[in-house]
Every structure is written in C-alpha cells, then in structure tokens.
Image 1 (cartoon, rainbow, N blue to C red):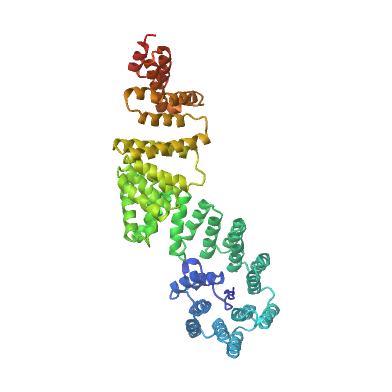
Image 2 (spheres, one colour):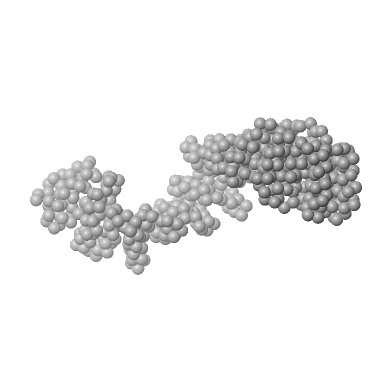
Length: 547
C-alpha cells in the first residue's frame, strides 16, 4: 500500500487552537492517513479567517492525487501556488503528479523549484522522497534513498525522516520497527501529532492500552487536537471501556472540528455506558437542531426507556420512531434493541397486536436472532394465542445454541395450552399435535433435570385433557401427580411452586376421598393448606372430614 503522509509544512506557521478552525486540523488528519476526514475539514474551513489557502490547497491536491484524480489534484496545487507562490510544497505536489504521468523530467524541475524556496530543508527532501515512493517504490528506490540521505545530512533530528521510515516499515508489516520509528519522531518533535496517532493505530486493536497511553501523551502536548481527542475516545471504545469512551467523546464533540457522524457515536456510548439521563438530553439536543436525525431519535427513545420518569412518554416516542422507520426502512434501519423496546411499550399499552407486527418484521429482518422468537411467543400469550406462542417458541429453541431445561419446559407449557385451545375449537387433530409436542419437550426437560416435579405435573395435565367423563377425570392424572408431589417435597424451596402445589395436593386429596381413604385425603388437603393458610373455608372443610 502506498504511503499517503507528506511532510509537515516547512514554512513557519503559527499554531492555532482548534477553535480557530483553519487548515491545521485537516492537515493533521491527512498526515494520520485519514483522507476522507482530512478532506471534509479542509473544505469546511477553506475560507475561514486564519486558513492558509496555499497549505489547504496543497493537502487537497495530495488527497485528489491519492484518489487518482490527477486533473483535480493539479487544480488544487495550482490554486495553492496562486495563493502563495513562495510556498514550496505545491511545486513538489506538481512534481509528484508528473511522476505518476511518467514525466520524470518535469517532476525533477518541479522538485528543484520547491527546494529552491526552502534551502536545505529536511522535510522538503522527505516530501520528494514520498512523491517517488507513491509513484513507484521499487523503480525509484535509488531516488528515494538519495533524498532520505540528503534529509539526514541536513537535519538528522527531523521528525519527517522517521515518520517516513516508520511508514515504510508499516508497509512491510514490520509493526515493531514502525512503532520504533514513530517514537523517534515524537522524541525529536513533541508536536508531531501524526507520530503519536500512527503509533497508537498500530496497537489500538491488539493492545488498546498502549494506544491510550500514547494518545494521552499527545493531548498533554496539544490538548485541543480534535484528532487526538477522537483517537483517544476510539481507543477506549476498542477496549470496550464505554464509560471512558463516552467521557472522551464528550470532550471531542465540543471541539468545533468534530465530525457530525461522531455525535451519533457519542449518543451510542452514553447509552451503552448507562448514562441514560445524559444520553437522553444529548439526543434531544441533536433532534432540536435536526428533527430528521434518525439515529438521535433512536437513542433518545432507548435512553428514555431506562428512565422511570419518562414512562408516560414512551409510547408516543415509540410511535414516532416506528413511523420514521416505516417511512424509509432501507435508510432508517433498526437494530435488534429498537424492535424489542418498541414491542415492549406496545405490550404495556395493551396493544399486543401492534407489538406482534413489530416482532414479525424483526424476525424477517434478523432471522438468526432467537430472542425475537422468544419475545413474540410471550406476546402471543398476551392475546391468548397459544398456538402462535408454541409455534414461535419452537423457533426460539431451534435457533438457540444450547437450549436447556427452562426452554423445554416453557415450550411444553405453550404446547399444552395450544392443545387445550384447539380442543376447545373442536380440532382434535391439532390438539393431539400440540399435546404430543408438549410430551416431547417434557422428555427433553426430564433428561436435563430428572428430579424436578414440573414435567410430571405437565404429563398429568395432558392426561386430564384426554379424560372423557368425570370418573376418568378423577383418576387420569393420579400417577403423574403422585410422582410430582414426591419430587416437589424434595425440592429445596417448594414454596416457589405455590400454584402448582395447590393444584396437585387438591387433586390428590379428592382422589383419596373418592377412594374412601380419608386419612390420605386429609394429609393432602393439609399440604394444600400449607400453601394457602388463609383459606378458612377450605380449612373448615378439611376439619369436618371424618375418618
């Protein structure tokens, strides 16, 4: 990959703070190999007071050249010369273009013009070396070597030399060698912003702390550098330290040279660092200046959903967000969390049908996401559509990498109620299908945890559904409920299962009463009362039983 960094301007330039919004930040971004960002800042600030148009056009010319837009690059370099004919770099830029066009003679003439304006400037020699390198690093190896040697002779401590050599090492994937060269560059010039950033970029993915340390050092020297602020925030982000990333982005977005798209990243980080109030306020601020900012609307809602005081405003916000998405779904895309939160608010508002529509779209858009199936199944329950719940939760289990006991039990319960639902509709074939699904999931649950009472309880419930008369009802569930009761009593905390326990013991008590075993009946009725001690009518009934 060709190196795109050029030497720092050799002419003396008064350093300006970020608030000045001149060519300076754009130049820093270019030298840090961030061409798109550099171009945006250079064009944004081109006509600002304090911008040196010779320098700004020079870097715009380099960007156009790197994009292989040679005619456009030439226009920028010529505009730079018109702005200041004594600025050497634009002649060197024209020389680089001549090399790319195969005109080595013209290139040499332009390089000499540039050299004549600065007289023994190491940075100028490195700029020429880079022009040869960008044109053909192998074919012009001798010229590159000669210019680097000349730069060393002029000023051995010029940071431009070591940044160029570091870039060459990086191109050869010698990361350690590149890092060493960048360190040397900053040691010779503490203001060589690109040296810090290039060093940090070598490590930001593999060892973010190295990058963070270097970028903090940069900001100690140049605290107003938007590039340094942004890179530090991103280094924390790569470390998955969202709270610190949010803090640094909070500093960066106040810099006039920040990028609009980074405002969205800041809103994201405030949410994921759980600073919900600040995230809500910031997103609201962004919407006030641009009501069409879809990302800001998303994060306003997401943060509000975590603020209790915003509860009564969530449904209208969900409606607005959904409307913006539906108006242009290709542009205004949802993430998983958007679908989930909107559906939750509709369910809370007793608008389950709308929640179902949202979740159905979510499954269509992200079919691999099992959580949508789970939430949709629970939403079907809200509408008492147990067949839908069973079918959808079946999809959840199929998509889950390691479904467990609770998943199988939940599916068994949904399938059982779906069976009851279809039985009531007089569709016995469908009812049988769902009851069989319930049994199959009970078996899977038992294989996971053999000593839990719940599978036996569900099998008893299913058996009752096949009882054809009152006498069969009195006996159909007895074997399964008896086993369930034994397992329930072995549970470490049977009080957790109050509803099921009452059903089981009441059934068993009546079974024994029908079979004239009053002692066993009272024993089970009294166990029922352990779970419902305030039921005085039931207690009097039990006390009135005579053995």
